[in-house]
Image 1 (tube, rainbow, N blue to C red):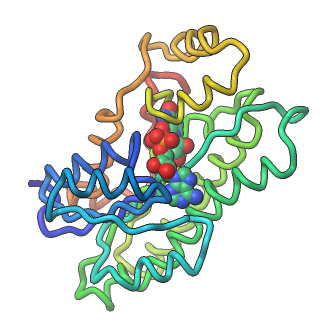
Image 2 (cartoon, rainbow, N blue to C red):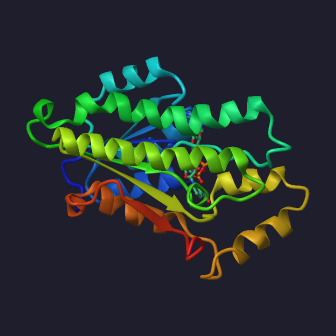
Image 3 (cartoon, rainbow, N blue to C red):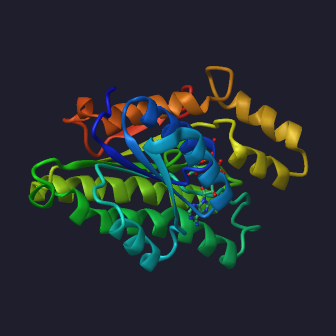
Length: 251
Ligand SMILES: NC(=O)c1ccc[n+]([C@@H]2O[C@H](COP(=O)([O-])OP(=O)(O)OC[C@H]3O[C@@H](n4cnc5c(N)ncnc54)[C@H](O)[C@@H]3O)[C@@H](O)[C@H]2O)c1
């Protein structure tokens, strides 16, 4: 029960890594808000988990929706900015509209989530509790790949938003920590969507595996385990850190 008494707000919580984190957080004693555009998936997961979980409809691109979602949360101790998409393509292939769409979800969404959670988390407003923000970047935010120009750029931005927030919160004494997780390829629906965009999905999947020195893709639970640590008080001295959970890919 490492998260007993905490309320965790997980964007993109209806699927993939978000769902794995939601399930682990509840198992560790937290109350969880599943915030997603996927109402059917989010409500089904909340129903499966019972009283410890509830669904809130949220499109992370929309500032008014963030304000409305936070307004109905009595407290937020942990924010996981997990909602994201992956746009496949090189600088020659990706259109400006695709780049803007990628940035709207993966960068603007993270920016808005961090910005508006501050009043919910900072110590004077929350009886000296503070909080933890966990942003999902990617190994692509550390090491670029030629066929992922929009995604690389968006995830690099997430890493620096994280560090900028971590410094600001520490300097102001807000008691809010902010860290990023950089997964390697983890088999979730987002990977299936990337494979579906490819002319040769089998070859692309084989190349994903080959790029991981550990010789396999990761599992959602291996990301959720790190998120539990960052959400818990065990990580009290950890802020601005990049957690590369990528089977050695970025070494
Ligand atoms: N799976 C991987 O290999 C991998 C690797 C590195 C980083 N990541 C990152 O981890 C995060 C989760 O990825 P995943 O693999 O679980 O993907 P996923 O596609 O399974 O889940 C993404 C979730 O985000 C939600 N979402 C999409 N757009 C949204 C929006 N505008 N507002 C609110 N919710 C929205 C979707 O409905 C879905 O539930 C993403 O940020 C992704 O970039 C994933």
